[in-house]
Length: 364
Ligand code: SF4
Image 1 (tube, rainbow, N blue to C red):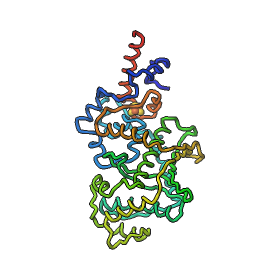
Image 2 (image 1 turned 120 degrees about the horizontal axis):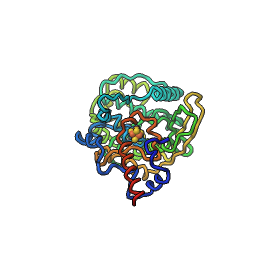
Image 3 (image 1 turned 45 degrees about the vertical axis):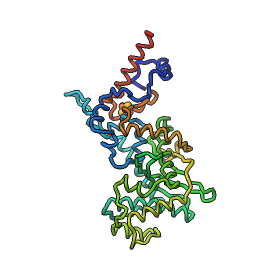
Image 4 (image 1 turned 90 degrees about the vertical axis):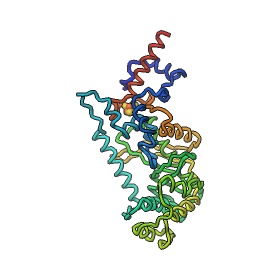
């Protein structure tokens, strides 16, 4: 199904995979891609696209295809490749949009099974983060009271002591008070009945492992109030707004609304979360969007060392320390579903390299 590399026969692809002198999946180390030259003129990707904080899905999308992530942040780069007079559409397909919207509805349905979202009026960015903290605190308190299930739980921090602040929302946490065990359950909805391919599973495993790592670092007390305040440019002394104070009273946070500043709330939640235990295991549940039947349950064990390597490799790109990469040969099926495919520079780059290598193999 891969038209991009269709002129390299299968035997040759196998040879290429195992040839250490030709790093098929490595970065464009010589920075030969035009897109990297354009991006580097304006600073690192982090400074340009995520000057504040990251969300977990930034990294999951990067795991899927870094080139696609870059194009989604900077579509002007791919538009430069349009030949004048040529008409090219790079929009997400209506079908893809419909799949996403169905997925969002199913997630909301699940959330509503156990909690009803309430509107809270926020006036400042400290108020906005205070609401996230209260949501985390409510999950912690629910487990302390013996409940076993919490949904839509915020987690945050700088994984592995990096300077990259990441925020995410865990779909579902399950707590077993007898074993004092917490695990993540992540829901993925699919249009198709078929099990997801390895590339999809890898992306989803990476995502739940990042959630687990963020959660574990909170539990281990590795996230400090100063870290949060400095990365998010928040004022710890800021008084919380009336909407948040009203919410604090309504949901029984155990905090006195008379005296509470953002910093006090933050300190309290960071301390409370340390009463939980770390996550070792997670699961990803794939269900069919229309019938809601289960397709696959993937059990995931956190390997913090492997995760760290993967995460730091991704951070190198954000810091502008290496060039952008697209998909590996075995994952070129992803290009079939990508709106950037007709103009993607990585596809040309790889096709050229494979063409050159093919020549070297046949004459060498
Ligand atoms: Fe990535 Fe393929 Fe899309 Fe290019 S066409 S951005 S390599 S998925």
